[in-house]
Image 1 (cartoon, rainbow over the protein chains, first blue to last red):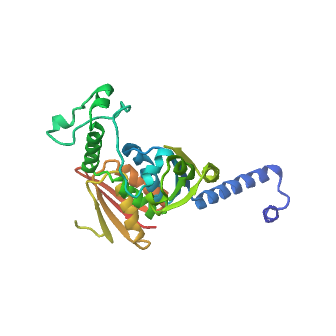
Image 2: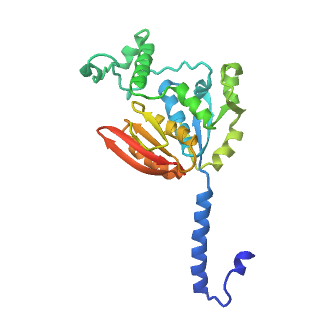
Amino acid sequence: MTAAANIPHGMDMEALAVWFDERFEQKMAERQANHVPSMTIIATKGTLDMAYPPFILASTAAALGWEVAIFFTFYGLELLKKDLDLKVSPLGNPAMPMKLPVGPQWLRSANLSLPNALMANLPGFEAAATGMMQQTLKQKGVASIEQLRALSVEADVKLVACQMTVDLFGYELDDFVDEVSDWVGAASFLPIAQQSDVSLFV
Amino acid sequence: MMTNATQTLDTRGLNCPLPILKAKKALSGLSSGETLEIQATDPGSVKDFRSFCEQTGNELLESDDDHGVFRFTIRKA
């Protein structure tokens, strides 16, 4: 017991308490300084808008020096396809602002509010909304999902995919990027999540 | 751009998190003690670069606002 050996002889309880508190603080600070933060994200959505949170958070955390793993399940698997064809729909998404990316400023800032029932029946409406959002993202200097995914991979973010979803939806493994590090189930992912400082469900 | 920094990085027009990601990449190419000067127009980058430096241990030497163009100088730890 090296710690006990360091206690000066004849130290009373009060002095011992002070010594312990100081030593404890010092050890905790050491531990924090050596700790590498970690994060796990569960990505369950496969739309263009919901593709952003996992990749923005993962790439940024990696830039901060954190260890990051993303578990892709259900529609989240769409984000791992070699050819990304992500769409966004204002249908069932009443908070989504519908703004034109072109035209004079007054028109661009106007919110084109259309009732859901009408949107659902307009052919090509989803494609139009997706096109508008892609153009707005580009204009505002926001990275594409392809770019954020590549930056995440480059920064050693682990991409883990749900095997069950592949079977469920009849996907071909060839459709997915080679950087997927593992095809596993919940029992393999949860222990990683348990050890991480931050765990998010998107 | 007149500067004494070892390297400069222009992230004007780019939005979160690209300025941070590009800065991180540029810093990894520098040696300890060398400096990186970054230009950005993303207003969120002011707080983000401060937080980035606190987390990564790199030193934020300078953070300036020149009429909407932000300038940061970071010394690599």
